[in-house]
Image (cartoon, rainbow, N blue to C red; front, side, top):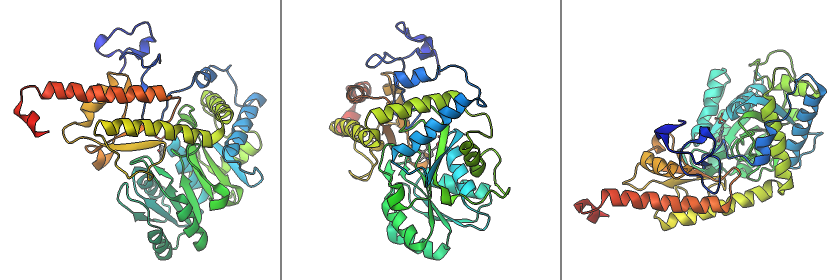
Amino acid sequence: MSGRRGLSNGGRDPEFAGPAPVNGRRGPVLLNPGPVNLSDRVRRALLAPDLCHREPEFADLQDEIRRRLLEVYGLDPDRWTAVLLSGSGTAAVEAMLTGLIPPDGRLLVVENGVYGERMTRIAEAHGIPHSALRLEWGAAVPTEAVTRALEAAEPTHVAIVHHETTTGRLNDLAAVAAACRRAGVRLLVDGVSSFAGEEIDFEGWGLAACAASANKCLHGVPGAAFVILDRGALPPGDGRARSVYLDLGAHARAQDRRDTPFTPAVPCFHALAEALRELREGGGWRARHEGYARLAAIVEEGLGTLGLHPLLPRGESSVVLRAYRLPADVSYAELHDALKARGFVIYAGQGGLARRIFRVSTMGALEAADLRAFVRAAGEALEDRGRSTNPGSPDSLEG
Ligand SMILES: *Cc1c(COP(=O)(O)O)cnc(C)c1O
């Protein structure tokens, strides 16, 4: 999509030929749920000196990232471990499910969006015995339904998405975790779009593992992902792994020896280490959560004055992303293109929601001024559209 329509780029990077920069940025403001706009310090970290992954300097980098990942939620390294992987968030989810469910295990997947359904697809692809509690996209997860499904399916493991990015719904992990504890079942969490942005009480909720990636609430770049797990959740390494590249146990054992089985995405690791330092210096996940909440409120209030309203009731969404209903007479493509021309990238709904919603994520190196500018741009986009479709037309009377 580079260099389209030959617009002058005002002396900015040639790759970013396009709309006028917002608040002096080099490229568009990304309101999609990752990859995110990088801070300057994380971007600079990508230019770290070349590094061989069999040298102690890489082992130091890997150790630092693993230690800092546990620090995000204050986890005790004697009990918990962070296993690094090279790949996107789905790689971490797949490594978690294939690596932690033993051959005689059985998985129950709670589905209320695309990412829950993806975990069922992973179980299918690897022949992991499984069943699913299927809920409508965006629906809340009723604890009684989970309890009944636990009784009916008798799983050894439950998998659930914490923040269902499909709709912005933040699932009630505390309640599901309590049901799993009562049933003596291990809970595996897709925390890809909540890790570092929402509360995750690993110890209190008794999680077995949580998969996430560098390029969402951690503000790193895509290519590095990880699973944080209770060391006791790892089955013995008996050579029966379901995957070679994503063998979580093999990665964990190698990393404990300051080694790595394959070539890692070294530059992405540099960026992740810097992003973790930045998170820590900025006050950790709580400060990030509060920052996101402030930005999301600017968007919600601003879009509200334009007549654009959230899909979910207040308080049921994460602070990371909200879905908004499209007005009946505006298509996603129209809104997207008008906003992109003004320097903002919003995100489409998936599947059956594609015609009904658009999504706005406030993760990444964003400031209040960016979101205020976004709200103004959305107002202009809707106004321009009103001008081009309305003048003199009888349709305009229908509202
Ligand atoms: C982004 C995301 C993923 C992973 O997607 P990738 O494209 O593989 O990075 C998984 N689960 C959730 C909830 C997500 O938001």
